[in-house]
Length: 184
Image (cartoon, rainbow, N blue to C red):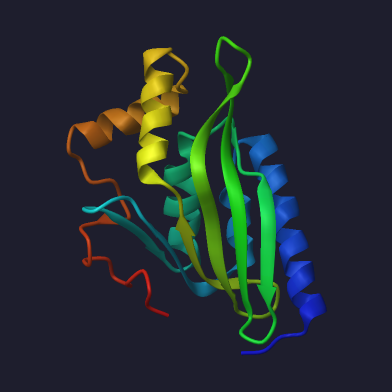
């Protein structure tokens, strides 16, 4: 569906502003107000795991709540945003950077590209979001942080649960999620 370019640009500005505020407050749940009630938000986590939240409340509780709870002290600066005003779609490319630093003073950062693909639902809300990031590079940086005792307590607990084989809420085997990654 087509939307006025100015409206989509304003949506992006609202999104970037709330991202910065949530990073500062270590709480991403307020971002849920920028989703439609029936929105879906998902991502792939390797060959055997996908995450999917269906509906604004699950997005708030799972995607922005439990999934982000171990990532306090991380920022996601957007590097570039592409807007397709004919289709009402936005692609935002971001970095994943920890506030924690290595001994040389550099920040821990997930190498490679990270991004979010959005479908706009009108009224300054997303109706569909899919994230992508390099799982191998994310694992490598978390392992490096473990080695140097730089993980937050929340991330330590989350990784312990994952290593124990416990499937976290919102996580599904490949192809088993209530909504497929490509499904609209």
